[in-house]
Image (cartoon, rainbow, N blue to C red; front, side, top):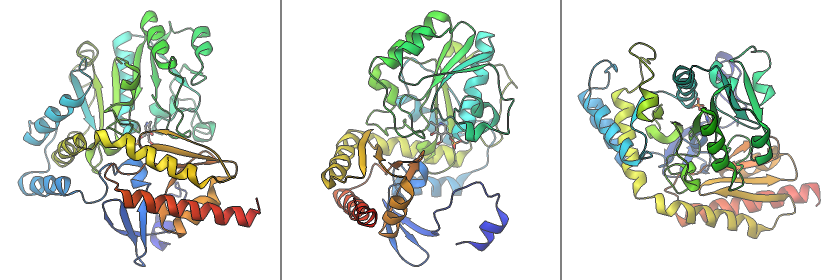
Length: 389
Ligand SMILES: Cc1ncc(COP(=O)(O)O)c(C=O)c1O
Protein backbone atom coordinates (compact mmCIF):
# COMPACT_ATOMS: atom_id res chain seq x y z
CA UNK A 1 0.00 0.00 0.00
CA UNK A 2 2.60 2.46 -1.09
CA UNK A 3 2.27 3.33 -4.72
CA UNK A 4 5.69 4.95 -4.91
CA UNK A 5 7.53 2.15 -3.08
CA UNK A 6 5.89 -0.46 -5.28
CA UNK A 7 6.67 1.48 -8.44
CA UNK A 8 10.12 2.81 -7.58
CA UNK A 9 11.91 0.26 -5.41
CA UNK A 10 13.39 -2.98 -6.74
CA UNK A 11 10.77 -5.64 -6.02
CA UNK A 12 12.96 -7.66 -3.66
CA UNK A 13 10.82 -7.88 -0.51
CA UNK A 14 7.74 -9.93 0.31
CA UNK A 15 5.42 -7.16 1.51
CA UNK A 16 3.17 -7.18 4.58
CA UNK A 17 0.78 -4.63 3.07
CA UNK A 18 0.77 -2.20 6.00
CA UNK A 19 2.48 1.17 6.41
CA UNK A 20 3.93 1.99 9.81
CA UNK A 21 4.05 5.59 10.97
CA UNK A 22 4.82 5.45 14.68
CA UNK A 23 6.49 3.21 17.25
CA UNK A 24 6.79 3.29 21.06
CA UNK A 25 8.22 0.45 23.11
CA UNK A 26 6.90 -2.83 21.75
CA UNK A 27 3.95 -1.17 19.97
CA UNK A 28 3.65 0.31 16.48
CA UNK A 29 0.84 2.12 14.66
CA UNK A 30 -0.09 2.18 10.99
CA UNK A 31 -1.31 5.10 8.89
CA UNK A 32 -4.93 4.29 9.83
CA UNK A 33 -4.07 4.56 13.54
CA UNK A 34 -4.30 0.79 14.12
CA UNK A 35 -2.07 -0.46 16.94
CA UNK A 36 0.07 -3.60 16.74
CA UNK A 37 2.28 -5.54 19.15
CA UNK A 38 5.59 -5.57 17.30
CA UNK A 39 7.23 -8.99 17.53
CA UNK A 40 9.00 -8.39 14.24
CA UNK A 41 10.87 -5.32 15.50
CA UNK A 42 12.49 -4.57 12.15
CA UNK A 43 13.56 -8.25 11.73
CA UNK A 44 15.15 -8.37 15.16
CA UNK A 45 16.75 -4.93 15.09
CA UNK A 46 14.57 -3.29 17.75
CA UNK A 47 16.02 -5.04 20.78
CA UNK A 48 15.05 -2.09 22.99
CA UNK A 49 11.81 -1.47 21.14
CA UNK A 50 10.92 1.82 19.51
CA UNK A 51 12.03 5.20 20.80
CA UNK A 52 14.01 3.94 23.81
CA UNK A 53 14.74 7.17 25.75
CA UNK A 54 18.46 6.43 26.31
CA UNK A 55 19.04 5.72 22.62
CA UNK A 56 17.01 8.74 21.51
CA UNK A 57 18.95 10.98 23.91
CA UNK A 58 22.32 9.62 22.76
CA UNK A 59 21.39 10.20 19.11
CA UNK A 60 20.05 13.69 19.79
CA UNK A 61 23.18 14.71 21.69
CA UNK A 62 25.40 13.29 18.97
CA UNK A 63 23.44 15.09 16.25
CA UNK A 64 24.14 18.33 18.04
CA UNK A 65 27.88 17.78 18.42
CA UNK A 66 29.22 15.92 15.36
CA UNK A 67 27.76 13.11 13.34
CA UNK A 68 30.07 12.85 10.34
CA UNK A 69 33.55 11.57 11.10
CA UNK A 70 35.43 9.05 8.96
CA UNK A 71 37.31 6.13 10.49
CA UNK A 72 40.63 7.74 9.62
CA UNK A 73 39.93 10.45 12.22
CA UNK A 74 39.51 9.71 15.96
CA UNK A 75 36.12 10.35 17.53
CA UNK A 76 34.78 10.32 21.10
CA UNK A 77 31.49 8.54 20.28
CA UNK A 78 33.45 5.72 18.64
CA UNK A 79 35.69 5.52 21.72
CA UNK A 80 32.65 5.20 23.98
CA UNK A 81 31.17 2.49 21.77
CA UNK A 82 34.40 0.47 21.85
CA UNK A 83 34.59 0.76 25.65
CA UNK A 84 31.06 -0.64 25.90
CA UNK A 85 31.61 -3.31 23.23
CA UNK A 86 34.74 -4.69 24.89
CA UNK A 87 33.07 -4.65 28.30
CA UNK A 88 30.64 -7.27 26.94
CA UNK A 89 32.58 -8.94 24.10
CA UNK A 90 34.15 -12.37 24.74
CA UNK A 91 37.23 -11.76 26.91
CA UNK A 92 39.71 -13.42 24.56
CA UNK A 93 38.82 -11.01 21.74
CA UNK A 94 40.39 -7.60 21.57
CA UNK A 95 39.80 -5.85 18.24
CA UNK A 96 36.83 -4.81 16.12
CA UNK A 97 36.02 -3.41 12.72
CA UNK A 98 32.86 -1.34 12.50
CA UNK A 99 30.68 -1.49 9.39
CA UNK A 100 27.01 -1.06 8.53
CA UNK A 101 25.25 -4.41 8.33
CA UNK A 102 25.41 -8.07 9.22
CA UNK A 103 26.39 -9.12 5.71
CA UNK A 104 29.21 -6.60 5.69
CA UNK A 105 30.48 -7.89 9.03
CA UNK A 106 30.54 -11.40 7.54
CA UNK A 107 32.30 -10.22 4.36
CA UNK A 108 35.19 -9.05 6.48
CA UNK A 109 35.18 -12.21 8.60
CA UNK A 110 35.71 -14.28 5.42
CA UNK A 111 38.42 -11.97 4.09
CA UNK A 112 40.17 -12.01 7.43
CA UNK A 113 40.15 -15.82 7.58
CA UNK A 114 41.68 -16.10 4.11
CA UNK A 115 44.34 -13.52 4.91
CA UNK A 116 45.24 -15.08 8.26
CA UNK A 117 45.40 -18.70 7.12
CA UNK A 118 46.46 -18.28 3.50
CA UNK A 119 43.76 -20.86 2.64
CA UNK A 120 40.84 -20.30 0.26
CA UNK A 121 37.99 -22.62 1.26
CA UNK A 122 35.15 -22.34 3.75
CA UNK A 123 32.91 -24.72 5.59
CA UNK A 124 29.33 -23.64 6.22
CA UNK A 125 26.07 -25.43 7.05
CA UNK A 126 22.78 -26.49 5.56
CA UNK A 127 20.15 -23.89 6.43
CA UNK A 128 22.79 -21.22 7.07
CA UNK A 129 22.00 -17.56 6.48
CA UNK A 130 24.85 -15.08 6.53
CA UNK A 131 23.55 -12.35 4.21
CA UNK A 132 23.16 -11.69 0.50
CA UNK A 133 26.25 -9.73 -0.55
CA UNK A 134 28.52 -11.84 -2.77
CA UNK A 135 30.88 -13.15 -0.07
CA UNK A 136 28.19 -13.70 2.56
CA UNK A 137 25.96 -15.32 -0.07
CA UNK A 138 28.72 -17.84 -0.79
CA UNK A 139 28.23 -19.31 2.70
CA UNK A 140 24.44 -18.86 2.74
CA UNK A 141 22.81 -22.19 1.97
CA UNK A 142 19.46 -21.67 0.30
CA UNK A 143 19.59 -22.30 -3.48
CA UNK A 144 16.73 -19.81 -3.92
CA UNK A 145 19.08 -17.02 -2.83
CA UNK A 146 22.13 -18.30 -4.73
CA UNK A 147 20.76 -19.32 -8.11
CA UNK A 148 21.60 -16.86 -10.84
CA UNK A 149 24.55 -15.38 -8.96
CA UNK A 150 27.13 -18.14 -9.10
CA UNK A 151 30.09 -18.54 -9.24
CA UNK A 152 30.47 -17.09 -5.75
CA UNK A 153 33.45 -17.57 -3.43
CA UNK A 154 34.86 -21.06 -3.82
CA UNK A 155 35.33 -23.68 -2.56
CA UNK A 156 32.55 -23.80 0.05
CA UNK A 157 31.44 -27.10 1.59
CA UNK A 158 28.04 -27.24 3.31
CA UNK A 159 27.78 -29.77 6.14
CA UNK A 160 24.54 -30.85 7.78
CA UNK A 161 23.78 -28.45 10.65
CA UNK A 162 23.57 -30.14 14.03
CA UNK A 163 24.99 -33.45 12.77
CA UNK A 164 28.10 -34.66 14.61
CA UNK A 165 28.67 -37.44 12.12
CA UNK A 166 28.92 -34.87 9.31
CA UNK A 167 31.69 -33.18 11.31
CA UNK A 168 33.50 -36.48 11.76
CA UNK A 169 33.39 -37.20 8.04
CA UNK A 170 34.44 -33.72 6.88
CA UNK A 171 37.91 -32.64 5.93
CA UNK A 172 38.72 -29.24 7.45
CA UNK A 173 42.29 -29.03 6.17
CA UNK A 174 41.55 -26.84 3.13
CA UNK A 175 39.21 -24.51 5.01
CA UNK A 176 40.31 -21.03 5.99
CA UNK A 177 37.33 -20.98 8.33
CA UNK A 178 34.15 -22.59 9.45
CA UNK A 179 31.29 -20.12 9.69
CA UNK A 180 28.32 -21.00 11.87
CA UNK A 181 25.26 -19.48 13.50
CA UNK A 182 25.22 -20.75 17.10
CA UNK A 183 21.43 -20.90 16.71
CA UNK A 184 20.14 -20.73 13.16
CA UNK A 185 17.70 -17.87 12.67
CA UNK A 186 16.42 -17.57 9.12
CA UNK A 187 16.02 -21.32 8.73
CA UNK A 188 13.56 -21.47 11.63
CA UNK A 189 15.33 -21.05 15.01
CA UNK A 190 17.28 -24.28 15.10
CA UNK A 191 19.12 -24.92 18.37
CA UNK A 192 21.84 -27.54 17.71
CA UNK A 193 22.45 -30.56 19.99
CA UNK A 194 24.70 -29.66 22.93
CA UNK A 195 27.82 -31.43 21.67
CA UNK A 196 27.65 -30.01 18.14
CA UNK A 197 29.32 -26.61 18.54
CA UNK A 198 32.07 -27.74 20.95
CA UNK A 199 32.93 -30.61 18.59
CA UNK A 200 32.96 -28.23 15.65
CA UNK A 201 35.36 -25.92 17.47
CA UNK A 202 37.64 -28.82 18.33
CA UNK A 203 37.74 -30.10 14.73
CA UNK A 204 38.32 -26.66 13.26
CA UNK A 205 41.10 -25.92 15.73
CA UNK A 206 42.83 -29.25 15.16
CA UNK A 207 42.87 -28.61 11.40
CA UNK A 208 44.08 -25.00 11.65
CA UNK A 209 40.78 -23.53 10.38
CA UNK A 210 39.37 -20.45 12.09
CA UNK A 211 35.97 -20.54 13.78
CA UNK A 212 33.67 -17.67 12.81
CA UNK A 213 30.47 -17.38 14.84
CA UNK A 214 27.76 -15.30 13.21
CA UNK A 215 25.89 -13.61 16.07
CA UNK A 216 24.05 -11.15 13.85
CA UNK A 217 20.66 -12.52 14.93
CA UNK A 218 21.49 -14.53 18.06
CA UNK A 219 23.81 -12.01 19.70
CA UNK A 220 23.44 -8.80 21.72
CA UNK A 221 21.52 -10.62 24.46
CA UNK A 222 18.81 -12.16 22.26
CA UNK A 223 19.10 -15.57 23.97
CA UNK A 224 19.76 -14.34 27.52
CA UNK A 225 23.56 -14.26 27.26
CA UNK A 226 25.41 -11.51 25.46
CA UNK A 227 26.40 -13.99 22.74
CA UNK A 228 24.61 -17.24 22.03
CA UNK A 229 27.86 -19.20 21.57
CA UNK A 230 28.53 -18.59 25.29
CA UNK A 231 25.79 -21.13 26.12
CA UNK A 232 28.27 -23.75 24.89
CA UNK A 233 31.47 -22.12 26.19
CA UNK A 234 33.03 -21.57 22.74
CA UNK A 235 36.06 -19.40 22.07
CA UNK A 236 35.69 -18.36 18.43
CA UNK A 237 38.47 -16.63 16.49
CA UNK A 238 36.07 -14.19 14.83
CA UNK A 239 32.57 -13.09 15.81
CA UNK A 240 30.17 -10.98 13.79
CA UNK A 241 27.28 -8.86 15.08
CA UNK A 242 24.65 -6.62 13.51
CA UNK A 243 20.90 -6.04 13.71
CA UNK A 244 20.26 -4.47 17.15
CA UNK A 245 23.84 -3.52 17.97
CA UNK A 246 23.34 0.03 16.66
CA UNK A 247 20.08 0.54 18.53
CA UNK A 248 18.26 0.80 15.18
CA UNK A 249 20.96 2.80 13.41
CA UNK A 250 22.69 0.63 10.77
CA UNK A 251 25.78 -1.07 12.19
CA UNK A 252 27.72 -4.28 11.75
CA UNK A 253 30.73 -5.30 13.79
CA UNK A 254 33.44 -7.90 13.18
CA UNK A 255 35.31 -8.81 16.36
CA UNK A 256 38.50 -10.90 16.43
CA UNK A 257 41.34 -12.09 18.59
CA UNK A 258 44.46 -9.94 18.59
CA UNK A 259 46.52 -12.25 16.40
CA UNK A 260 43.78 -12.75 13.78
CA UNK A 261 43.02 -9.02 13.61
CA UNK A 262 46.72 -8.28 13.06
CA UNK A 263 46.55 -10.14 9.73
CA UNK A 264 44.93 -7.08 8.12
CA UNK A 265 47.21 -4.24 7.14
CA UNK A 266 46.42 -0.57 6.48
CA UNK A 267 44.20 -0.20 3.41
CA UNK A 268 43.16 -3.85 3.21
CA UNK A 269 39.65 -3.10 4.44
CA UNK A 270 37.58 0.05 4.90
CA UNK A 271 34.04 1.39 5.04
CA UNK A 272 33.22 5.06 4.51
CA UNK A 273 30.32 5.00 6.96
CA UNK A 274 31.66 2.32 9.32
CA UNK A 275 32.11 3.58 12.88
CA UNK A 276 30.21 6.78 12.19
CA UNK A 277 29.45 8.81 15.33
CA UNK A 278 25.67 8.45 15.13
CA UNK A 279 25.71 4.66 15.04
CA UNK A 280 28.48 4.65 17.67
CA UNK A 281 26.50 6.82 20.08
CA UNK A 282 23.33 4.79 19.58
CA UNK A 283 25.29 1.54 19.93
CA UNK A 284 26.99 2.58 23.18
CA UNK A 285 23.63 3.57 24.70
CA UNK A 286 22.11 0.29 23.51
CA UNK A 287 24.78 -1.90 25.09
CA UNK A 288 24.37 -0.04 28.40
CA UNK A 289 20.58 -0.45 28.31
CA UNK A 290 20.72 -4.16 27.40
CA UNK A 291 22.82 -4.75 30.52
CA UNK A 292 19.80 -4.22 32.75
CA UNK A 293 17.56 -6.48 30.65
CA UNK A 294 19.74 -9.54 30.03
CA UNK A 295 18.55 -11.51 33.04
CA UNK A 296 14.90 -11.02 32.01
CA UNK A 297 15.23 -12.28 28.44
CA UNK A 298 14.93 -16.01 29.21
CA UNK A 299 11.88 -15.61 31.50
CA UNK A 300 10.10 -13.44 28.96
CA UNK A 301 10.85 -15.97 26.23
CA UNK A 302 9.52 -18.80 28.39
CA UNK A 303 6.33 -16.83 29.14
CA UNK A 304 5.68 -16.39 25.40
CA UNK A 305 6.42 -20.02 24.56
CA UNK A 306 4.27 -21.43 27.35
CA UNK A 307 1.44 -19.03 26.41
CA UNK A 308 1.52 -20.31 22.82
CA UNK A 309 1.70 -23.92 24.04
CA UNK A 310 -1.34 -23.32 26.27
CA UNK A 311 -3.41 -22.47 23.19
CA UNK A 312 -2.86 -26.13 22.30
CA UNK A 313 -3.58 -25.63 18.63
CA UNK A 314 -3.76 -28.72 16.41
CA UNK A 315 -2.02 -26.61 13.75
CA UNK A 316 1.14 -26.17 15.84
CA UNK A 317 3.80 -28.83 15.42
CA UNK A 318 6.31 -27.36 17.87
CA UNK A 319 7.18 -24.20 19.77
CA UNK A 320 10.94 -23.85 20.19
CA UNK A 321 13.69 -21.35 20.79
CA UNK A 322 16.02 -19.80 23.32
CA UNK A 323 15.34 -16.54 25.11
CA UNK A 324 13.55 -14.17 22.77
CA UNK A 325 14.43 -16.06 19.60
CA UNK A 326 11.23 -18.05 19.15
CA UNK A 327 9.75 -20.24 16.42
CA UNK A 328 6.24 -21.61 16.13
CA UNK A 329 6.52 -24.44 13.65
CA UNK A 330 3.15 -25.03 12.02
CA UNK A 331 1.70 -28.04 10.25
CA UNK A 332 0.47 -25.66 7.56
CA UNK A 333 2.05 -22.82 5.60
CA UNK A 334 2.69 -19.76 7.75
CA UNK A 335 1.06 -17.18 5.51
CA UNK A 336 -2.61 -17.31 6.54
CA UNK A 337 -1.74 -17.44 10.24
CA UNK A 338 0.77 -14.60 9.99
CA UNK A 339 -1.66 -12.36 8.08
CA UNK A 340 -4.59 -13.20 10.37
CA UNK A 341 -2.45 -12.32 13.42
CA UNK A 342 -1.34 -9.11 11.76
CA UNK A 343 -4.93 -8.14 10.99
CA UNK A 344 -5.71 -8.77 14.66
CA UNK A 345 -2.79 -6.62 15.86
CA UNK A 346 0.36 -8.75 16.11
CA UNK A 347 3.26 -8.34 13.68
CA UNK A 348 5.59 -11.34 13.47
CA UNK A 349 8.04 -12.73 10.98
CA UNK A 350 8.53 -16.03 9.26
CA UNK A 351 11.12 -18.61 8.22
CA UNK A 352 10.90 -21.10 5.39
CA UNK A 353 7.35 -22.18 4.61
CA UNK A 354 5.85 -23.21 7.93
CA UNK A 355 7.52 -21.23 10.70
CA UNK A 356 6.22 -18.09 12.40
CA UNK A 357 9.12 -16.36 14.10
CA UNK A 358 9.10 -13.91 17.02
CA UNK A 359 12.09 -11.62 17.62
CA UNK A 360 10.47 -9.23 20.09
CA UNK A 361 12.17 -6.36 21.91
CA UNK A 362 13.66 -7.27 25.30
CA UNK A 363 11.65 -4.47 26.96
CA UNK A 364 8.31 -6.27 26.46
CA UNK A 365 6.15 -6.20 29.60
CA UNK A 366 3.57 -8.71 30.81
CA UNK A 367 0.77 -6.91 28.96
CA UNK A 368 2.69 -7.04 25.67
CA UNK A 369 3.22 -10.77 26.20
CA UNK A 370 -0.39 -11.42 27.20
CA UNK A 371 -1.73 -9.42 24.24
CA UNK A 372 0.58 -11.16 21.77
CA UNK A 373 -0.33 -14.61 23.06
CA UNK A 374 -4.04 -13.80 23.01
CA UNK A 375 -3.94 -12.38 19.50
CA UNK A 376 -1.92 -15.32 18.20
CA UNK A 377 -4.21 -17.87 19.87
CA UNK A 378 -7.36 -16.19 18.59
CA UNK A 379 -5.90 -15.94 15.09
CA UNK A 380 -4.79 -19.55 14.84
CA UNK A 381 -8.18 -20.69 16.15
CA UNK A 382 -9.81 -18.75 13.35
CA UNK A 383 -7.58 -20.47 10.79
CA UNK A 384 -8.35 -23.86 12.42
CA UNK A 385 -12.08 -23.19 11.96
CA UNK A 386 -11.56 -22.16 8.37
CA UNK A 387 -9.66 -25.38 7.70
CA UNK A 388 -12.07 -27.28 10.00
CA UNK A 389 -9.39 -29.15 11.94
C1 LIG B 1 22.62 -14.79 11.18
C2 LIG B 1 22.57 -13.65 10.20
N1 LIG B 1 23.71 -13.27 9.59
C3 LIG B 1 23.73 -12.25 8.71
C4 LIG B 1 22.58 -11.56 8.39
C5 LIG B 1 22.63 -10.46 7.38
O1 LIG B 1 22.47 -9.24 8.01
P1 LIG B 1 22.06 -7.95 7.14
O2 LIG B 1 20.69 -8.18 6.62
O3 LIG B 1 22.15 -6.81 8.14
O4 LIG B 1 23.07 -7.81 6.07
C6 LIG B 1 21.38 -11.93 9.00
C7 LIG B 1 20.13 -11.23 8.68
O5 LIG B 1 19.05 -11.66 8.94
C8 LIG B 1 21.37 -13.01 9.93
O6 LIG B 1 20.24 -13.41 10.53
